[in-house]
Image (tube, rainbow, N blue to C red; front, side, top):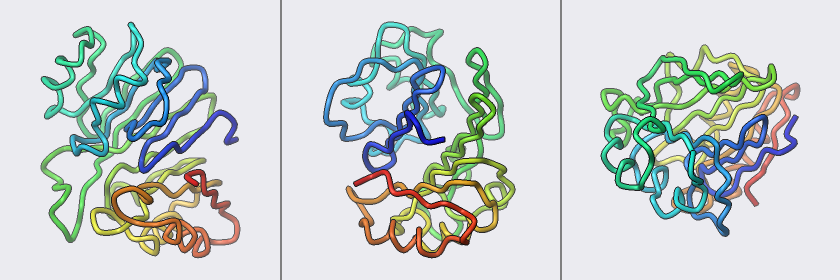
Length: 210
């Protein structure tokens, strides 16, 4: 189920299933220039990195961005019809791939206000559902997610802690849970290991960021 899926660094994910999809490319170690689709969760520099977007784009790449990033994205040279504005709780299609947005925000801190309309993504590809949480706490919305594979932040400070992330995952019960948002700015591999150890036994935890 995890074939051709990589957690590259921090919150950066690459999925090569039907199309090559990057989520929040950041601190990439090489040029790929093979992205069919780029999904950006919000405008913080560790999620919208112009330097790293340039490492993955090709001539016809489509990019999904929040409203506060439209002008910056245009300056990167994307064709206007390849820039897709996203709002929370909407649905989009790229051929047979379904892309849904879900609100991502903080409950008890101010780094990611709900009113910013920043997002996570729920992708349906070949009948497998992937949840990429974005920078979020446990929210009313994400407690209702149904998915097969979940990528959740565990680094704390700006997002859920490892313990909080495990609480969310044990509620929504995906088959596989992958910790992200650690190892670069906040959080360590130990947070990822704590997260894995707190998962219910029927949920497979997998560390992809080494």
